[in-house]
Length: 348
Image (cartoon, rainbow, N blue to C red; front, side):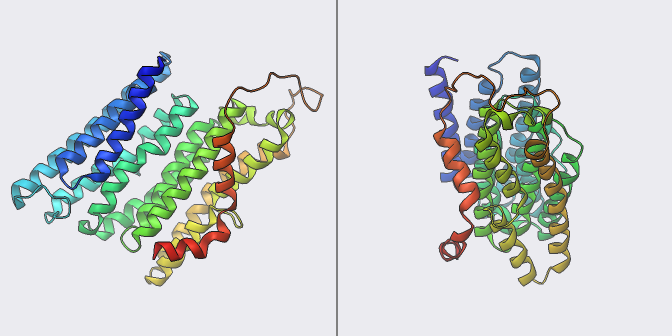
């Protein structure tokens, strides 16, 4: 892609998200979301492969539907209340419609069906943008409007997303689909705690972004898109294989890695709010996700592929990819747990 076009598209992505962050008027927020969608569509279709074009079309249709729903709900709210302000969502139908549309935008269950299909059709870097940056603007709107929404709806969305994210990833062999289901499960954890402690939602979103970035950049470095490709990575880059296994366990939420921190704090907060059944369901749903991360770890570090070369380090050309983002995101994804007290002080 032409570097000037790429620069325009990436700056438009940044502009769209910033516009949504800064807005308190529904029309401006809607405009930011639309700029965001239109900026990523050419990035998704740049390879001219049928799968990429199909993924782009599916993504565009779902995002356009969600944007239309947001527009309709905010217009309905303005018609009834006379205000376009986000903080004045007094009409329950409009606020429910908006949370449903935003759930469709970020791929929460049961509006998640587009997410694995779209991610499977993209290359790993565009998939990374879709899984991380594209979640920020809708999440900003969800956090601002969550107080006006029925708590039961948010709880239902959260529990269903963690269960679907866990069950869906169990029988997958494609790594991008596994990461898509992982994303759905993490979104469920963020939504479930939103009404009780929004700062924990932001903490979970931050840690999710770093862990997912580390996972995608690792797969990009090793050019792996299937589980059986992973089993051949150890001979080419043993250090990377070790850190990848730890990053995957961090995504699963095992101590003493960073991914344990948001899950621990969210379960603690749910218990404080006198919701032991919800906390138990969430913890059991996390086990489902952990199973498929362990599958990846097993394939990567504990098995030797039957078709590997019999030498420890096969001949290969030096990679031209930048390793700094990978190193940075991996370090954050693995070693932030001791910082929990400091982060809690900042959050409260």
